[in-house]
Amino acid sequence: MKLKVLGSSSSGNCYLIEASEKDKLILDAGINFKEVQRELRFDFKGIQGVLITHEHMDHLKYAPSFALNGINVYASAGTFEKLELKGHRFKIIKELQQFEIGNFIILPFDTQHDAAEPLRIFNTI
Ligand SMILES: [Zn+2]
Image (tube, rainbow, N blue to C red; front, side, top):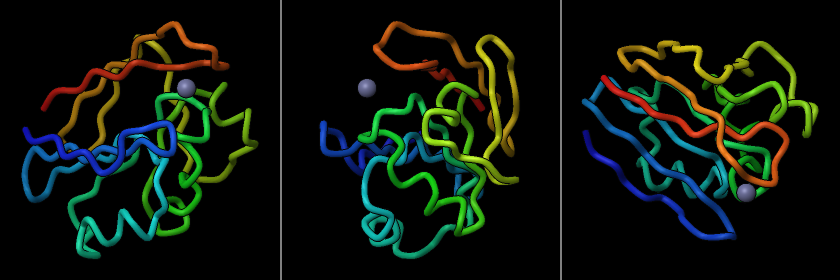
């Protein structure tokens, strides 16, 4: 499994988790979607979804861009509510409820942060 940092600072966090060509996840959507497109060379084929850890803008700001481009966005209800994000692309996940995205098996934990419902996300394949 490879981890590529697309952005990691208070101005924006975004990571690419790559298990294989077909199995990729984006963790957090805090950098401009155009930048993500450039980093991925406009190849979103293997991107199975975007996981958002919490509602702070440096993690969430560009989540709607992913949804508009047909990519499902996963976060806690508390995270979505803060920004009133709704729609079939926004999938609510809960702490300690394991779920799958493609071949990824994901188990969110709650964590301490000054946010509505932050999740620490552990994933395996
Ligand atoms: Zn934060």
